[in-house]
Each structure stands twice: as C-alpha cells, then as structure tokens.
Image (cartoon, rainbow over all chains, first blue to last red; front, side):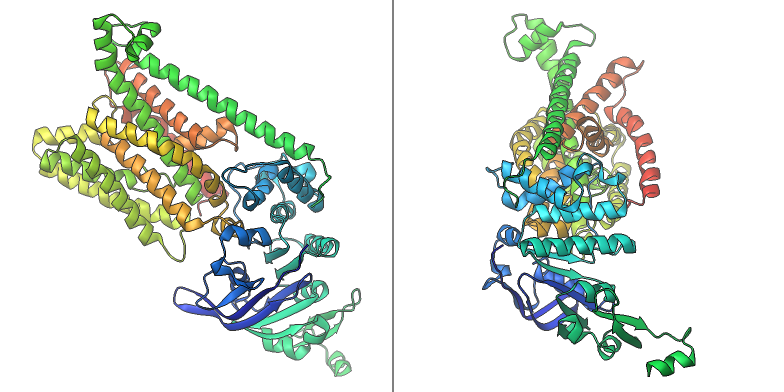
Length: 273
Length: 345
C-alpha cells in the first residue's frame, strides 16, 4: 500500500435546498480504521459520500494526495478510493463471481478488457471474505450475511488503498456484525488498507476504531482515539442520551450503558454515583 | 494483491458464463435469420429458401420470384427485423438503466409520445414519410425529456421514472384519441390500424431511416454495454467504481429513444416487444447475455408474430394484436411477482 492523504477542507455538502454538512475540516488517518458515529441525519453518510466524490461540494473541497477530487478523473479516484454504499443494488440473476468481477471496472478500459490480474484480484477478494465457494451462486439465493460479504468482496476486488463503507452492518445480526468488522480489521492489519466506516453501534465503533469521529448536525463534535473521545458527556451531547461509560470487559475500550427511565433501582444509581 | 494466486474458480465461472452467452446469442441469430427467410418464403405463392436468398441478394434470374421476394415480401421481413431489433435493444437498455423490469419504453410512454406525434402528422397534415419519421422521433424525444425532468430529484430513481412515465403515457394516449376523433372517417381508420402496430404496411422511407439508424446505433450500443453493466449496480456503486453516471445514462437513454422513435414511425407502437425481449433474452443467455441478445429476441418476436398474424390465422391481423396476446399475460405475471418480491422500487 502506498500512503495517501485524504482530507476535507471547509467542506459543505447538501441535497436539494438544505445543507447537511457545513464548513467541515477533517483528515482521515492513513493506514488506520476510522469510524464515524452520530445520531440519525447528522450528516455522517453525507460526509462519506462527499469524501468518495459521490456528491459535488457546495463549498470547500475534498483533497486526495494534494489534488481536489473534483478535478480528478473519476476513474483515477476509483483506483485509489473505493466505497461500499449503504444499500447497493444487485442486478437480477447475477452470480457472485460476476458481481465481484465488476469491482475491476476502474482497472480496465476500452482496449484493456479482462486480464489475469483481474482474475487474481477477484480470487483474492473471494478468498479474503470467505466467499469462494459461493462464486457460482446467484446473489438472490444468499443470506444477508453472505450477501454483505460478497459486496465487501466486490469493493476489495477494486483493490484500492482506501475503502469507505456506509453502515455495512445494518442488516446483519450481531454475530455477522462482529464477523464483518473482524474481517475489515484483518484487511487493515494485513495490508495497511485505510478504512473508514459509518457505524450505528457505538460499542462496536469504540472497539474497532483506531480513530473515532463523532458528528452532530453536520459538524464534527469530537475526534480521536475512542478512549480519549467517548465519554458520558460526549455521548449525551451527540445522541441526547443519558448514559454511563464503562470499560468493555473484552477489549477495554469504552462501552456505553444507556440509563433510560426504567430498570434502574436506586441502589445501583447510588453505587454508580 | 496476492500476485501468485491461481484463479481457477473465477476463471472457469467467467469462461462458462461467456461461452453460454456467445452460444445462445449465435443460436438466436440463426433463429432470427431462419424466420427472416421464412417470412419471404410463405404466402400465396411458395418460394423455396434458396431462391429467396438468391433473389434477396440480387442473384436470382426469375423476374416473377424477384418481384414476389424483393418487392412484396422483403419490406415486411426487413421491417419486422428492424423494428424487433430496435425495440428489443431499447427495452433492455431502459430496464437495466432504471433497474426495473417495468421500465420499458412502451410502458413508460415513450412509444405513446412517438404515436401521438406521428398520428398528428398523418391525420392533420397528411405528411410524407420523412415528416412522419421526424415527428415520431421528436415525440419520443420530447416525452422522454418530460419524464426525465419530472422524475429528476437529485438523481433518477427507477420507480419514480416508471410512475411518471405511466402518467405521461396516458396523457399522450388521450392526445392520440383526440386527434383520431377529429379526423375524418378514412383518416381515422388509417390512424387506428397504425396505432395497433403492424409491420405489413411500412413505408419505404421510414424503413430506410430505421435501418440506417440501426446500422449506426447498434455498434454504439455494444460499446455502451460496459458502462451499462456499471449503471445497473445503482448510481452510488457505479460512481464509486469510476463510471461517469450522468453522461452514460443520458447517452443510453437518447440512443434508446431514437430507436423507439424510428421503429414507431415505421410500424406503429407494437406493444410489449420492448417489455418482454430483455427478460426472455436473459433467461436464454444467462446473466452474461447482453444488448445484442435482447435485440435478437425482439426481432424473433416480431418476425414470429407477423408469421402468425399473416399465415396461421384465418384472417390476417395487425402484428401488434399478436404481441399483445403474448405480452399482456407476461405483464400481469410481472406485476404480481414484482410486488411479491418487493422489487417495484
């Protein structure tokens, strides 16, 4: 992996007539796993799409290796930076092998069609995601967990140094969520791939992130290592949720325990206080 | 990534997919060719296949056969072939582009737009071939533009496009109805036959325009097959993979709309061909199959429908009646299953 510099400068993004992200500056740490968290509609997915050049900035710019991505050819961006959207669409009747192979698009051209490199990249992507045996299966026959692994495989076949994923665990049960995040961590540790994930689950976010970004109303409220950033005060500020933050018994990262209005006997509250 | 890894699974899967697509497309081409020749063989006077082919390429020596084949039957056969190819290609491009099996140009109103303008040209101004072709084309383009603009909201969603298209289609059909009701009896009858759609009464001028357009557009469509394979993954994925989504989409819609416009000018709005050609082609070729296969299936349907309409039934019927009989049950089945699978959007 070559090292890369992906950053947003005074970035403003929006749809129709509303700005979602306003005047935001951020730098994505190279070779690390960054997780973006925040309440619904705080602009975390919008930021991710902006970083991946899916949205044209209303103001400011996204800079990749010193160049504004808007000035780069889309195919050149796609060789360095991949994105797995929130709910990708699989065409009718497509097989796993065919779908994963489409991740090779930016490496091909009008005259340079399919090569041995493409075969090898697809094979490696299937291997890494444990989907090799599924290669000839139809996407519609797969379970949600398998399908998500196949989409990750497609993004891996693209063979980019940076990979952005928009809520990749949304439709997965807890077991498959952990499996997928483990897989992404493997990829990061093995090859130094820079990974940016938008996640809903704060506890998993704290466990898997090297760098966490907490967003609120289109701006970054706090960022840094989860241990330094995720405190009860920050969670309350970001999500409007009263909570306790305790060490995760497995990973020793911050773990959020919501208070709620029920199920909290006085004795326990006093012990915590 | 893992440069030394062998890739037998991937390669064999890809080779198998491609082989199936190539074999199936070749078989389809042969079937279409046979139907094309058969169309020129049968009729009141039977002409053997060899004589048909010799005569069609100007190598025959019997003036009687030449007259039957070249003057009477070749225009019909060529119309069926050209219209079928055009509708099949346009249909599959729309469906893949919008990710919705209902999004074919005859269903979303592009064909109705072409009809409205062509009928206006026929009834109101008694126009010649060039004007009818041009009217149908501008009707198709204008309708597509209206639907595109109305459906645009930070991008195009297949579902919204289909719904708005159906609305626009009804609007255009009401215009057709109005024009026909204003025309005198002879013109109105003329227009009604044309509205059902038939390959038997094509004007040479319109036919030439369509065939010329096909010669230019088919190679372009085949080149655009690669970006189309990106666009069917949805806008976000396609953009993330470096595809220029808006440019490619506009190019592909324009190309399909031109084909529909010219095809409609030649034979009227032959319904359902664009809707069913793509899905049938995909069943035959597997998911590796493409635009050309869909065009060939379209041609096979129109040629087959014409043969049935002219020779198998006691009275000869317009081609559009036969395609309607095949297409309507498919549409009902599609509506039922699309909703069940929740794939309407």
